[in-house]
Length: 250
Image 1 (cartoon, rainbow, N blue to C red):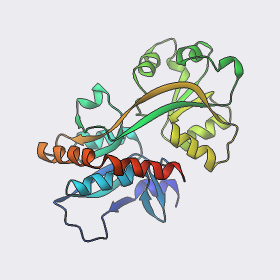
Image 2 (image 1 turned 90 degrees about the vertical axis):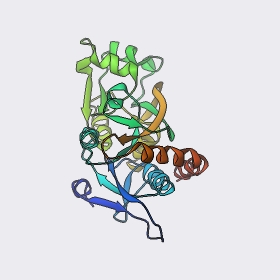
Image 3 (image 1 turned 30 degrees about the vertical axis):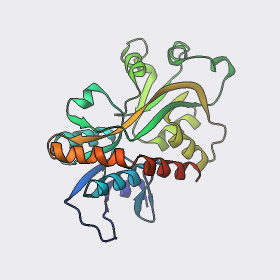
C-alpha cells in the first residue's frame, strides 16, 4: 500500500467482538508513524491506535480512525468538529484554546537525530544553532517552549525546516541536506532500524520530555463524554503501560 493511498483511505476500527457502544467517535490520525500508527495487512495498528481503541471502548464508544495528511489538517478538522478527538497531542496554550485536553495517557521524549560530530556532542539546542546547524521538524508539531522560542527568533528561524513525513526527514538527513531532524525517540529509532540507517544516532541533548494527551472536541463531545474518556484512561493505566511495553520489544 502506497503512502498516498494510505492518506486517502478511511480506516474504521470497529471491534469484531460483541460490543455495544453509545456512538462511534471519529479519531483523526496524522500519518504513518511507527510504532505509534502504521498500516499492517491493510489495517491500522500501533501504540496510539491500540490505546485509543482500549480507552474509547472502556468509555462506551466505538472508534473510527480517519487518516489526515498532516497535523495541521487534523487540528483544523477538530476545530470544526469534523473529528471528535486527536491522539498523541502534546500540550500548548494555542491548542487548548480550541479543544479540551484529556488527562495524560503516555509520555513522549523528543530527540535530535544526526550523524555524530564530536565537537557538537556537548552542545544544547541554542549551541547547535549558534554553530549554524540546520534542523528538520514536523509541520504542526509542538516541541516545547525552548524550540518554539528559538524558532521564532529572527537569528535562527532560517535554520529550521519543516516537512510532514518522518520518512522524508530521515531521507533529507541521509542526503546531508540538513544536519539534524527532531522526532519522538521510539519513532525515530524504529525508522532507522527499518531502513538500516545505522550510522544515524541520537544526540545527547533532550529537546522535550512531556506528557501526551488526547485533544477532545469542544463542539462534538459533551462534558459528560469527555469525563468518561478521562475516567477510562485512569482506570486502564496498567493496560496502557503494557501496550507500550509490547512495542518496545518488537
